[in-house]
Image (cartoon, rainbow over all chains, first blue to last red; front, side, top):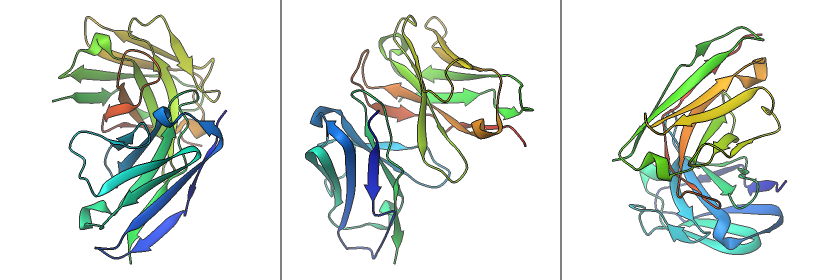
Length: 107
Length: 121
């Protein structure tokens, strides 16, 4: 089973700053099978990125995904107040595993 | 608009059973694989189970295999999760999740709000 490790656990930033979130896999992942989700308190997760770098419908272009092999990154170019949330990566090609999440909090 | 509405959650004693339902609308339900994903209080997301479009293919995480059964009724646009032999560590919010397509690999492009299942110690 593929294990996904996200870092950091918590990211403290101010609105307008850039956020860089990491997702590392225990073995190589197909770049077509890596997704990112956003979850706010009390809400359902929302799909942000699929196929490592493709934005889902309606997702602003300040969100971008990159990476291949075992290392993937979600970047938020300029944090808006509504972006403070928990972010999860997921491998959906073989194991459907989620990472443990990165919380982006207001500094 | 895609809508996924879970029901059937609640408080159940250890060893008990519960059946969750997920009513789907706004998309061609019979053309999409479906899953259940749970989230224990204060914890991350855990995939629980998946089902193919025709219901013949069912898949489970090791933590629920042999205790949970996923099924679907395409005539009613409804997904189910029968949960037996419930344990304290099954306590979680259970989300219904829509697969992006009929077969793997698929990501989850829509999620229900979730329903709480509580198994007290």
